[in-house]
Length: 591
Image: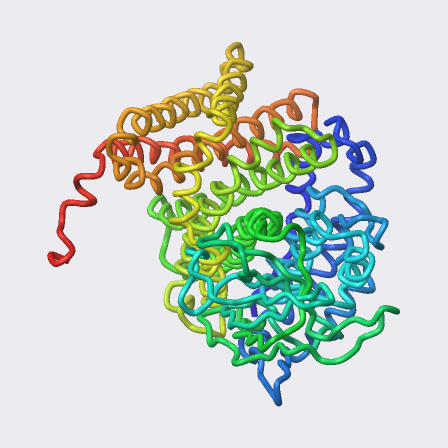
């Protein structure tokens, strides 16, 4: 059975030596010294290894079952969920006014990485609740917050997001779910929603559904959409649970992976709901939830791959196959371990260099959210808005690729279910699809985010990269990092210039290159992270750090990424500059 042990050492390195959180000047960060974060991370690591990871295969093999209209979760999930609630893990960064602990979001992300690596499907029950909590916290009335948030923070009640319908996914303007206003200020919600993660289960006494629907007078398209709070059980004035609402489970979807999470078809048959936020402004309220969810899905992409990598690394060290071409390295055994072979090393280095870069990128993104929200920093808000499609799209594409690389290390055993590697690949695959498929993320990046606020956020990013490179001009050791980053940044700017020069007269020229642009930008972001990590590692060595192996390994891993991965930027630029013609050349009937 696969195992998982959280890499808290690397998390601490990113938090304290790269981001330097306790010195960052973000309200609340001053309390995040090493001793404090170590205590939180070590406790979360223990829960991950001892409570969640052993249930990962259980959830995959048992799945969820619909019985008499109620979804039953896999064996052990209920006890694990109680342990999560009792430990306060569901409330880590939530508002203390509603029972939360008020910790920074970046720390919640670090803990979340562990929980996802240990058991992604299980963690989705509380993860979706956190997103619904955030939407109500941002857009709810004082009465709605008081009614719902305390029990959502504690996960006595969980939450969902309901967007997709059988005939519309990305194109929400085609939505058919209706909201009919009632005399008492409530609405009757009627329609069907599909692909609803954690849509029903036996882990909480109530489920608070956030449902997009069309109310009268809103007009066509997404401008007519509103967001509604629709609880599974109605809530009485005193906070107790009342009658069952008119929402039911049509079926549980049979999926490729994340079997331990109940992905439901939900039928709303005149269910009672209440408007959340402004009428006909539902997309604005829902995006509060979706933007958080997209960073969380990016985290899922690399966190599942982290667990896969750990097991592949252990297998490569243990499995004896063949002899090293440079001479026997295990003379006492019949063969050398897999890890002596260069192609296995290449695969493991691809995995390791991506995962450590992805962790730094995600934690940096989370720190931008903290800075935007806690310090009311508009520049940070603009930068994380720009980065969100890259975090979601690039990290999930590469995360799935990394999980497959880990599976490949096992050879034929990787294809056999008992080794568990298949589950990592199957679970990681959904991250490329939900919360906006990655092609949509690329379109959002190129079509909206680059031009946002007159393009000032992407220009600020270019200046950030330029300043990072310039800061190391006098340090020859940093040249492998800064030279590669400079080249890649220029290629990213050239791609942006191509869009500016060609996109207006031929929009397909930009849209055909959007996916490559997202990956090009992803590599630049990870190159920036590796440059910062190398700087921190050299600084530690220069000041006499005792753990030289860790810091020297960090530098060598970063040099690998810059030498072996950053050259992909040239390929992506060449594809972008080929324009729309190769993509659009065939007529429809020629396919």
